[in-house]
Length: 311
Length: 241
Picture (cartoon, rainbow over the protein chains, first blue to last red):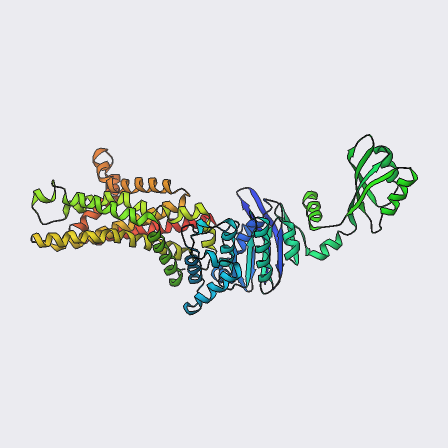
């Protein structure tokens, strides 16, 4: 449905996007991740025809962003970060304006506005001006704006940033609902949001795609890399380190804390085996005591941290 | 490319903005107060005992220099400031829809300011024998000048996020265009520059039509000014891409 070919964007001499290639299939919910300044918003702005790339091309179905921006804009509903909406307009008035621009038939306009007000929970604020609304409600108006024309593709840039936890869950639920029927691209750096809503994840860092896979596969591929947190009583750091270094699969041992009685360590492991019984027997052999031992499973957060720090 | 539907939606939205924001309610009364002062002040209308609106039309370019940048200052600056510019540009409308829609909305408010002053003409015609030629010429001229200033104001508004800067720069540019004839008299300069500056003077072209002489050169001047400023706005928008 969307094909991004060799997309490059320079702001003066700063490279925001560096030869990005990506294909997004119909009906997919794609999470676009990356640290601040990674190039996520730039990519979305090019996709929505707000900005032009320095090099490369974006195709949406059979249309390209240079020759058919109007056709592409009709297919895309876009919510920019922090939903910038005209402050002086009433919510109802604003949605009507968007419905007009999106060319919704006059006879169906009221019905569509009502549907979106129900979906986004806007019924209570329809006759308030946008400047009177809380950030959460503004975000919901932005969502209604993006969905007004019943677009085939929804692009949401940080849709929950600045919201309180309750509002986040509400907006996330709305997005999940939309994702059942539409192609959704969700840009965020709130990782649990991606884990709960997206099927596929693309991680961008310094303008380049560093990971692109289905969330489950991404976790599986990182399955043989994990960390173990260990606190031992009775041994000194050097002695514990030398004892554990003998275990195959532990690639790195880092000291977290070393006091008179206990030492805390983080063990970076790279193996398919479970090394915890081996650690236990090494500690026992040396007559030390285990105060704490737990293995951190690969979460999106650990994958993200690892990938964005490696680059 | 221009899509009529898109243009109409932008135009309607801008007109609604003028209605709900204080702009119209501040600008129209101020304009009418200043216009009434020039029209009825004893020095001009009552002492001269002439059935004419010459003094009103003489003062109009200077009044427009202040009023029109106030009408146009928010058109793009506000969008750039609050960020709605991004939402606007990602909706299915073209640059020209946005530019022409906003321009026509500003021209409509300018014409709305001007409309009540037509009652002055009716008032004079009841008092004496009014020559309608210069009156109609004056209004055509005012609409052309106003449209040109609206286009200039729109261009300046597209450059800056700050409305106050758009207002001040707009006033300065409109004043310079209206007062070039004075500069020409005060500063000695080569003939060729003198001729060029005289042609660029909006006040001279305005007065030509306001006298009732409709010359295509004057009309071309105002239309060219509109097209140039609107084209400049398009270039600024493209540059922001």
